[in-house]
Length: 520
Image (tube, rainbow, N blue to C red; front, side, top):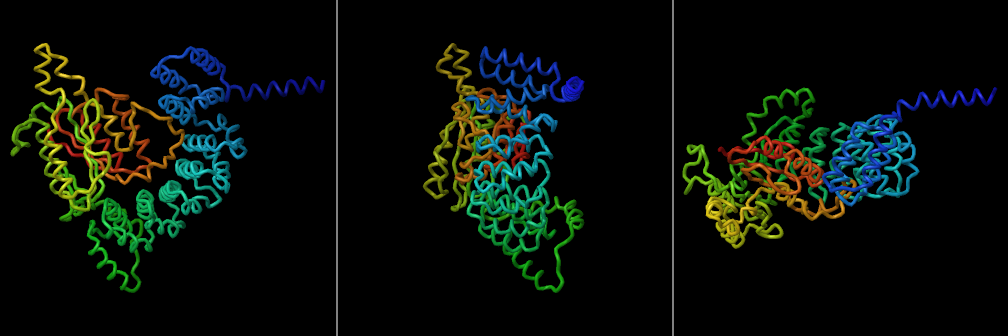
């Protein structure tokens, strides 16, 4: 009888657990996935096959997808990560949560922490804290721990973010500062302020954003000091100073210093309350014209920047040879070709670059054509050389090529060179060639980010992406977001022509930039 009761209890227990975690239909679908996967297909098929598991959340599906995290094809890795991140049932993950503190493989720990964070598993916070607090934790683990706590929205109970903000690894300091700001952990304000003097500009950028959210009065003078050093961070400093004080002097560091000296001399002066800041912010737009208005400010297509490390990416695909339609908007150019207008604007910008600016230019169509392999100073020699190079550019596969093709000289026309490889052009800023992928990192930790001085990109295009590894605009935007999460570059986007401009507008908005529609 005792054995019978025990057996019945086990059966009942199994019956209770089975529907929640191991739905028979889902198990069958996962088994079919495994059978078909063994046959092997091309990359597109494999990505589509992985995506069939999106609505098949169960432990066997997790097991199969985790195997693909180290797949040699980055696209398959990313698809597996995306599907796993959408599995949000705590019971699905519980065994992996329990196992996390016992795990020894650093890469595996970092991957699991990233997944727990992306799935926003509150129940995983204690395990995440445990691995993050381990003195032997690898830098990618510490980095992913900070990002996961931010994503989940729970700082934990071990004051871990307060420790990580002083980490020896720049990307970890950056991630911790981001998390502290996002979670509004005002008690950590004093720990973030020293990062305003960090050796890496990306860390400084994170610290500027964080103090703008935490609003410690002690950050005002360090922000003014940082603004005085120039560069792109001036604009970010101005924004955070406004959020702390509700005063708006743009990037005029001298005026900020004069005002701050007067404010601190007033007995009992205090920074405004959060409520006062919120009210002031509602009317701030009318002051936006003050930002960047300095004689040394660089502009391109009407977009100002205080950056001193700039890359101009210019579309030279065949459609750039087309004529603009809105003639009234484009007076004063030697002709009405889209490329002539862009070329003229770029030449004027190059002439106006301040001597302390470092710059490069990238022309792109089907392939990319950089002027230099690195940023160079905007001295008189380099500016003249750059202008000569720009004058020599012409649209590939334009009207002249079309005429050759219509005459039966398709080979001479080389129309294939004049398509629009938008993904390749944008990823060039990160030193990535999507058509020559290296072994993809399975976490977001990328040490190359802090090695890049480039902080601002101007991207101008008129055409829909038509060639390259990815041409769907949302997929391109996702790729830029994925890389730029740690690079923190600003992407300004300029549209000319009839292209659906929502893509370029979203590119700018998602990456801290300005969108300009030059016209059709």
